Image 1: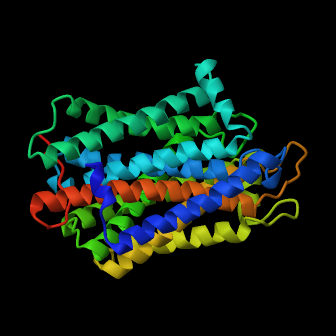
Image 2: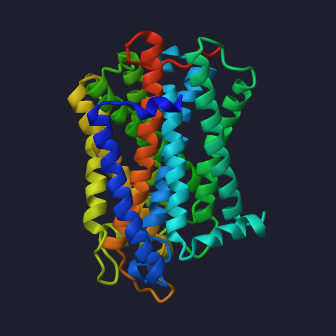
Image 3: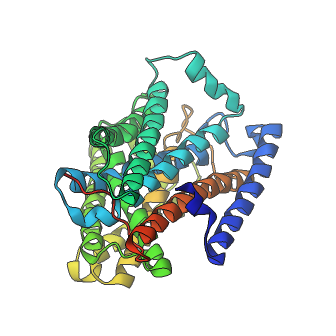
Length: 396
């Protein structure tokens, strides 16, 4: 089926060429980083994780969000998701690939990754993070490709696919839970030292990931005529709304715990994010922007009549994605390092090399997603005689 990715419209090839140019530019900056070292980034002794690891954290959630389609479809036989489920699985593949690539670029010497394989340390959370990420990548690749091939041949998928589907549900929760444990297991970082870190990660994943999927699906519908169905769109929007409510609620719990208990260590990172600490207000505008967008997006998503309107839904989803990305893609990571043991703040903002190298990873993820979705849509068009939509084998 991969040959279908080699045929497309000029617009499709224009997108491919554009992504390859972005990847090439980012690769050049990555070579520069490998030559000069991480000194080209704004990372330091005090802020050892930055933009790269922040994107890893965020896109692990995007990958895990595919379970929001798999659960209703396979466990509750909600067949209205049949046109979108394979898109979610392919989005998970590209997201996991970006996650692993962000780890690669974050390492000063990429070959250090081999230490995890040659010198495994099961007592390390990082070791298990590698296991669950690679496992989830292979699960989605096998399930998605096999199901699409079976649909193309007008056959039921092999019997062994369904156990893998059920396993992928558990695996989806595990990838973000283990990632959360990377942070929650560090007692010296007060902002991360919370029992609901994994719950916060999952709540944010289950709103931001489906939001990205829905936005991309609506864009594809506009460009190609693919129609996921009104009921599927409304149902996924409802799931996003509830998940965002839980996400905001969990953050308010953290505020209550920190300020009602009056614990300086837990209050300081939050004060740093929303007011500034030790004269540093670098992230304050970003965090207030995120808080405002989160509130406005909920105000637009909660009323059912507003949520049903296409432009309002798209606007709310864009605001939600931006808000969750700022909170989880930057604020969460940097605030964990503020203040340092000397009650000082080391300012951090990604440098131009960091941003361009990150664009390489984003470009690779977008390229993989474009090719996979092109194959899937082409298979559907072939089976349905030109009617572009997406229906994997029916859940039994």
